Length: 128
Image 1: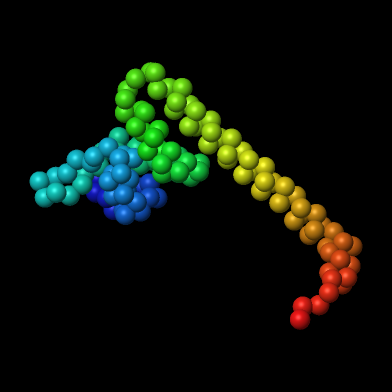
Image 2: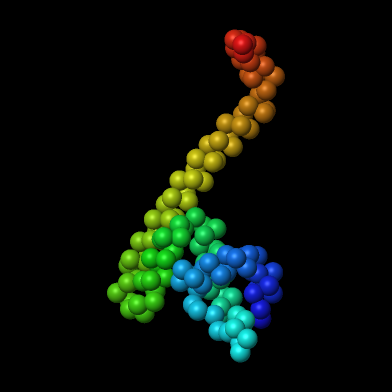
């Protein structure tokens, strides 16, 4: 499969796929005799894994560290890999909690606009 087809299949731009390969987030992709990348199912799984980890908020640096630990193929790196994932899970949960509080505040304002917001806004000084 060529890079355009992989991009369409994964939702990851061709430029991002090339970048992921260049920085080592995905293994080096095989090339045909003309030097064109030829992706297989495993390449696609790596691209999707990287995309999912980025969507979960992992920084490029954290993902590079995770992949580097994984490449060691040594079970002794499992705790370090789990630390990376657990750290990101905590960060993500904190962001979700913060956003949920914001949603709750905004819902309150919407539901109580006339009884709460309008009187409050009328009491504010004018912009000059």
